[in-house]
Image 1: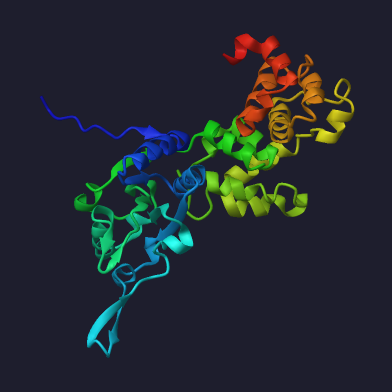
Image 2: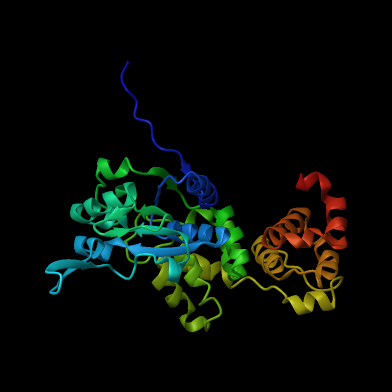
Amino acid sequence: MANVEQKMPVHNLKKAIEMAEAYYHADTPVYFWGPPGVGKSQGLAQLARKLRIGFRDVRLGSKLPEDLHGIPVPDVEKQMAIWLKAVFWPEVERDGPRGIIIFDEMSDTTKAVQSATYQIVLDRCIGEFKLPPGWWPVAAGNRREDRAAAQAVSTALCNRFAHVDIAADYDTWREYANVKMLHPYVVAFLKIRPELLLKMEGSDLRAFPTPRAWEQVCKFVDSPSSIRQDLICGLVGPGAAAEFEAKMRNIVIPDIDEITADPKGCMIPKEPAGRYALSSMLAQNLNKKNFDKINIYIKRDEMGKDFEVVTVLDAVKRDGDLMNTKAYLDFADRNGALIL
């Protein structure tokens, strides 16, 4: 029987971070693979914040082998050379006794730089420098099929890591977007067109949609209409920018103050795109003080059960303490079958 090549499973960023945490506790180096802008290094930084440990990001694409080994300088008195280490290496006094050091852009480096990383990953030292015992080495890079500047990574280096392939995923990005308070119009647009969260096909590889690029788009959504589409085009390309502009022109949602002032009478958009944006805006701004008023607003028939449930569940993911309120208990009581 002919051998059939098996591909590695592909995970969303949330699952990849969960896996990385397990590898961290087992002190097993991990390598995050994925397309540009999908959040590989950002995910590992997020893990460091969760664990309350240090984080150092080393961009290998701009490094030479001697940057890792250190630069020799003469010690005339001892008649020997000493090696000056680079500032990017972690120091316990500055960075803490435990942490994550990521070698980013690993697949964008030369074989010589890759070879220089062997020892630090396997033996936790390189030359005269020793990685502090509580520091965990990891790596991230693009795959060759991602149409980035990726080179082949040697099997000797690969064998020193556990490997996790990552893909863009809208639900994971939406959860991140609501925590970061990203513009609800962008969140709504990508709900309607999730395939544009990451799209490199047909691109000239300058401006194209990625999770990182859409986060930047949020800065320009409220720009003057005369320049807004051009600004967004510079980030995600002409096709995605044109689609976003067409959808955004038809979205009108009330602000949070209007809703809390008149939850029974304040307008609710009829179009799904408007209600997606409204749901995201409410999920980002819902708190213990306004939950009662928002509860009245979202349970109106015009809102629709699906939007009501998504609004509260997204808010709870952002702030778990919202579950300890009477408003949440009221919500759960009328939607118990939908939130199980």
